[in-house]
Image (cartoon, rainbow, N blue to C red):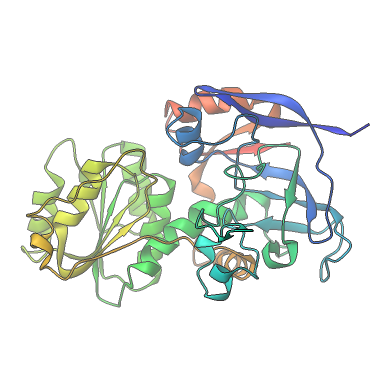
Length: 357
């Protein structure tokens, strides 16, 4: 008889519940992780609301921090009992996408060849991390040992939030001296802002209206924070840049209005770096896009794999970034339904919730 574990399972729109589920069997290239800390992402809320489709019965969550419980027979270079993380984007390392260096698009290979479903697997196409145990496929490509000096909460943002936020700055090709606008100062936007600062942006403008988030944005490196409830953010950003616009605009919410505003503040030849998960079709306004003649670039990206995770943890270990202020609430896995209620309704100044098992 299979051993059982507790897991947060998508039942139907507006219902994610904690239920019993069998602990997964471990294949030759897999690793079984005992989760010690995880969290809830804004994308999980899209799943909860039925705005992003996943299979019913799927375990949700894609931000694992834990300890290796069992290794597959072919896995080398790791040991049971080792503290590890795995990225939300978990490439196989041997697909066409991986070998082209495009880990974020590493979907499954099948009899029809590569299908571009994306490399985000945990809580999307396979069972995820909001559980007592997580099966990590292609473990040698994805498991990253946690430096001994770092706590769970210090590395909790690495599997997704920090990686995604930094990718907004990286794929925007920010240069020393650039002016950057970041729309929405949720956890991903805050990490994008921090990434822009680390990459050398000289002026960083955040867009937000929640007072607590506006304060944290300044701590993370914003030179200006525009309250969009008090002024039109496009007008204010154009004023702050002397009418020039920004070199890079990062959209970190996933809505038409923020996407359009980000496009309107990008200078000709600039880049819109899109990080939001959208739940409906996007429209590109003719005037904002300069009828296609503005030499704009629109990019999306979130890499994964163990080397990506190592780099992020080394950034934290070096003292160049502290993501612990993003953790505002703490719950036990047994309380995850209450945690979802808090996070989905954005009460009590919540940014990120550390969920321990």
